[in-house]
Amino acid sequence: MSSLLLFLFLFLTPSSPLEFRYHNNREIQQYLVEINASNPDISHLYSIGPSVRGQELWVLALGLSPHRHTVGIPEFKYVANMHGNEVLGRVLLLQLIDDFVRGYRNNEGWSVKLLNSTRIHILPTMNPDGFDESDTDCLFSQGRANYNGVDLNRNFPDAFAGLRKQPQLEESRREAEVRAVIGWLRMESFVLSANLHGGALVASYPYDNSNGGSELVGGASVSPDDDVFNHLAKVYSHNHASMHSGEQCRDSRPFLEGVTNGYLWYPISGGMQDYNYVWAQCLELTLEVSCCKFPPQNQLPALWTENRKSLLAFIMQIHLGVKGRVFDGSDVPVQNAVVEVKGRSNMCPFRTDKHGEYYRLLLPGEYVFTVTYPGHKVLTETLNVPHGPDQYSAMKHDFMLRQIPATTVSPQANPTKANPTRANTPEAIPIKANSTEANLTPSCNYTLNLEAGASRSSWTGLCVSLGLVVVLLSLVS
Image (cartoon, rainbow, N blue to C red; front, top):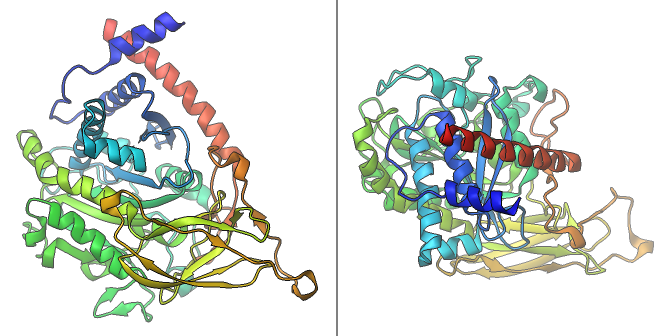
């Protein structure tokens, strides 16, 4: 068996840089299997589920502990090809994987530092079925929707629908690709994310929708973390070769500094970035990375060069703000403690995850934190937050709660202890959504789905093993 693994390692190790072209879905799978097989110390290949037509949505995780979460190491993700005919993102993310792996093997500081401090998940295609139907027209090609003809970026639960008393679909009736991403957000505590699109050149940020309430300011739908979102968008646009200049694509208006509030550009309901932010406490941007949805293949090297610096700089922003754990009166880390920042009234309050961890992306400055947990005194602390990305780490601060004497405790929901002895196990995480029935949203209930993570992990291992065999057979035949 060891001889076979050695043979696979040597045989599947990529020996030359990734070719600049449009790889089909089978070739992407083959490439990811090769990278995973030849870099087992820093990569982990897994599927978050199948598309409508049964094509696996493969994710490659990169980091020093790629198989599971490590306390103190934030989780980042890039997603591309949500719209099947917007294809540059597929190329950029494959090139990013190649760049990371080669940089790490060559001991290049940028790669080593990012992989030492961050666990990075890359989903090159969220809509492989749509890609199969797409053609090469720059603006009007088919393939945007999935195999059922549904726009995936309109199919997520919408945070504002419930506020307008609009019922939501049951999760089982949503598209397969959307259900896969929702399940993914249950398995990992993502902190920062970006979704790569095409057809414009701009970094767009939440909110994408509105209830017509106090969030509407000057035509924009402003979130409580608008300052952070604006900063994140400008990090990408100003590190891009031309996005920051606000260049106007043929069928879109110019954007000041290459950034826009999503609603101010055009409102959408059921978008993925709002869902990430409201329910999964993951700050996500939508990155429109090319005027042409299907750029000519000979432009790909230049487009990679234009985006590479931005892609890396954006990942580094995961180290903004503060991170840490919340401990109860017995010094045990606790789940579902509410960690609020004064002046930021999130629709669904940010809470600690199953490891007792919290992450708050914040710009440098002074902030007042309030931590609440059943049976404990409300804790308020003021923190001076420095700039963390240059140090590859957010400020670390643990909150230590004091228990209320038993005679004065009022009836409350049962508190939830984190599991400090299993802090690095890959079970699913809480998510701010009620995914079991139609309901008025947002529902900020936190639920655990411990079996899902384990079963998906075992199933994925089997698929990767079978994939290795398939790739090997295809290469020697």
